[in-house]
Image (tube, rainbow, N blue to C red):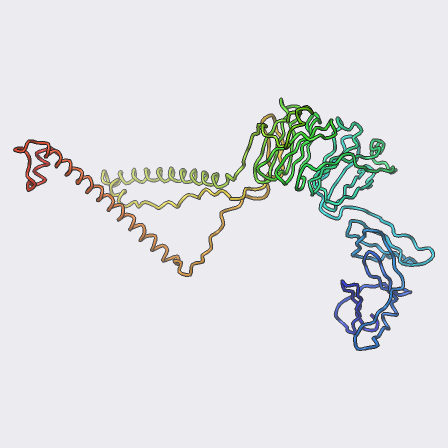
Amino acid sequence: MKSERIVSICSKDTQLSFSAVGWGCLKYDASPPGRVARVREVIPIWDFETIDTADTVDDTGLLEIEPINELQVDKNVKLFSLIKINAPGYNLWLAQDANGAIWKLDLSFSNITQDPECLFSFHSEAIEAMATSPLTYLMATTALDCSVRIYDFASKNPLTQMKFKQGGTALTWVPRIVSYSGAQIAVGFEDGVVRILELYDPKGLTIFAGRKKVPDVDIFLKHVFKPHTAQVTALAYERDAEVLATGSKDQTVFFFEVEKNYKPIGYINTPGPVCQLIWSSILHPDSTLLIFCENGYVLEAPCPTIKEEEEDRDVVSYEIHDMCLKCFHFTSVKSKILRLIEIEKREKQKELKAKEREERIKKLIEEMGEDAEKEFQEEEEEEEEEPLPEIFIPPNPSPILCGFYSGPGKFWVSLFGIETQPPTEDIEDPKAYSIENARKKREHDKLMKEMEELKAGKREQIQALRNTFWKLIEMNKELPEHMQFKRTVSLSKILITCNF
């Protein structure tokens, strides 16, 4: 400020003024009459001169100043940024709303002050799902900001929106077989609820592309039910639109009979959270449902049979136990492929070395004669082969993003990210071997292994001699007494006599 003061605002609705220079920069509108505006749901206006000349009257350092004006923007508005519009003679501002809007505000507070005007409205959180109308130029979106919005992309205008208490996580447009006018959408929410919403007169919205006139559109609730206990992640109508399938992170897929106001048919359990549902097209002989789970599992389920009301009356649970499911599980094959590539590479290297060896032997035979091959074998040293890459399967498979049928009995799957490699083991032991000592230890271990193999061979020979000795003793006992050898007879004489 001109008086070398700094005005700042804290989160406790308190405006602070510091008598210092160079601590920062504050943007304010200094055009007469000077005012300082603070951004929130209600915008208060303070007189600039009053703040500039303010001084405390006691040692507390506090001075209470009442705003000269306040502007109520709207309900459920969270403004967090203001920008002055450079228009001479007007005190107009653009305000950004954290709930997804841009407002034009008139802060002149005169007799001709304009009311706050919402210029744009949009989602304030991540958009989770989107679908287009099968009939007209409409698009529906839902997001975690607890709203469902309808857009007309022919006229490039938003049409209407509907707010809820939970964020939307899945959305699909109801087929025309169910709603001939293409006026219904199915939306899944974070709390496991599924709502069927209907648009008012959507057919009359678009007759040609690029129109400018936008009629009034409204949304109202048609059906609501709660099949899941967690976030709904997928919605899919069967190819004849007789059955609606809903998937959720609670690891279940629920089926509904569309014709009878979405009467529950039953549900099945899945090995993981469901991320997508795809029904087979009319090109397939049977109507089947592909269920994609985040943890790498894919299930193929047939269309459930719709029971009569009399059969369904005494059922205790909606769980379907007799449905025949096909299960596919995808794991990493990267390490196996790398191992096979390494084996092929080494086989080619061995073939090249064998050819080079034969050529060298031929040259040595021509130069040195028949003894050349023996000398070549003595000179040649066997090279130690490095161990093949280990087969590594990550404990957590790559999550499935999406998939689709490519034909009867065939489907494609898209996985997320790059397959993880085996984690690098850190050297934590302070007594770990150095590189040189590790090499010496490897040679020592190799020598000890050879000695152990030699000792094992000697033990086998000794055991064979023992078996032979005991066999001879048994044979000697079976002979008549006058023909038996005495224990003092040499073993070599016995072996010669018995032709061993």
